[in-house]
Amino acid sequence: MKFIPAGVVPFVALLLLQRRPVAGRALLVNGPGCPGNSLCRANVHEQTRKQVALLNATAQDLFSLYLKCQGEPFSSESDKLCSPSGIFFPAFHVNRTSEKKEVMVAMYKLFAFLNASLGNITRDQEELNPTAKELLDRLHNTTKTTRGLISNLTCLLCKNYNVFQVDVSYGESSKGKSTFKKKQQGCQVLRKYVQVIAQAARTLLPHLSPV
Image (cartoon, rainbow, N blue to C red; front, top):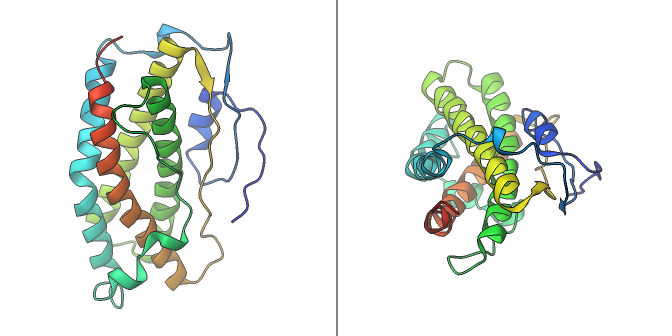
């Protein structure tokens, strides 16, 4: 899959871009462009911790419900059809011993990608399964939590490290694909999400003590 250079995009613009699936890049630089502490809530560390824990706790249920709503053959052949080996997902090589700044940047990349992917999946499900209210509600709620988490990571990166632009890749859009391919891309992304969010929670939570 190809990614299109999108130039330097500040955090605020990225937050707007993440409302729709796009492919692009923003360069990681340090500089004087952070909006400052005004982005941060007083309880930003605790709120971020709760958001990551919530996403981790609900990921498997979201994936299971997604499979149920897609019908056959996804319900019975999920191991084969939803294998995420052939899709792009941001590399996540940090761990508990990584530098806190490195962890925060990796988290931002991960959740920016996830937010765009959730938008893609939600759009497809609104088209393919418009009466699947529980699934659509869970997708919307997961997206809402993810956006809040991105906002908090933006605050922490700016406030603590003066990082206000991050190299971000967004996943492939499913527009124009067949119904089967749309369903398959969604289940591949959500299965990978279940795997990565558990690792992200284990990695990030120990780093969320105030600086």
